[in-house]
Length: 407
Ligand code: SAJ
Image (cartoon, rainbow, N blue to C red; front, side):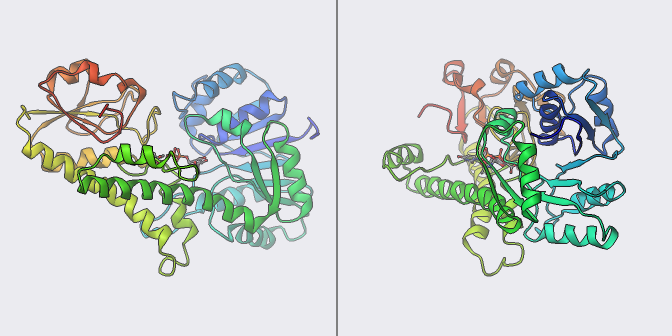
């Protein structure tokens, strides 16, 4: 059992870092919750839960119950600790090159405090061999320090964060056995799933392979839907029946793949072999292309439709159903493209979004939108639209790209 005297600094209070800080605090550990975003820290210090997804109600509850706890300090300055956990974003650059500068910056900050026997954990998604680069940075500045370093990639599903942080199995790669075992002691505090210890390289690969697997499988579903539509056959029925086979499990076709992870991590994985590796690269392109195909289809249906086309109602804007997260949302791309091509007023409904604006569009309630617009496009299958077929009239044209509207 890890001593309660240990001080833990979490770096990055996003959808991974904040629940982690709160969980450790709830377990009576002393947490220094650090983020460079001063506004976010002000919010968190003032009882507002920052960037949390409204669907992660359990995280919000946990925040409310821990915010006055003396064991947690929200700060925009890093402080000295015994364990540092890095949970910062790692985007890609324009040319699909991984950008892990935030991780390196975090390491440089940690170096100001690093002492013997400290543990550094990286949870952020990183490219292969990043940990080796981190070791070099540390060696160059603090050659004599005897530290531990582990890679424990996050597996949190936005919209179900707390549950997954606690219940999912975890992979821990250590630069040596001592590092892996120390990190395991930390995760044992709150992880109810299995904890598997391995090498750094295997852990680096595993994280990227998980998300690439999902991307490739979504691409397969998207290609099936494209093919079925060419033959005017219901892809939903085909996939439903194919999935009755005991070894077939096709995912859901969509308007494309959004979020901060799945559209990005395959590029991390194939970073140095883009020309040699075809399936993973092509899956990425299939999923990107699906968004364009959907846009073209909507434009063509709009042009051939006879209903009043003054107003268009778009249902759903987030990157997937039932969350308020807009990162890399294909729906936003589609709306912007439609605006360029169609001479209509755009009304948008998304029950999960407040305070979000797209230029030259109006947000409205579902009932108002249905009153104003006869041409309706469902982009994201939020549960709130499950009974939409009961709310529309014969004068509406529904283009359903979410698979929620009864066939
Ligand atoms: N999607 C489909 N069809 C499907 C399932 C998803 O088109 O059948 C689309 C969604 O609409 C969305 C995108 O894929 O646009 C990604 O959604 P998701 O639910 O598959 O995944 P994320 O990005 O929310 O979270 C993923 C998870 N990874 C895996 O399931 C392998 C999560 O466990 C990771 O922790 C997270 O990435 C991450 O941070 O890496």
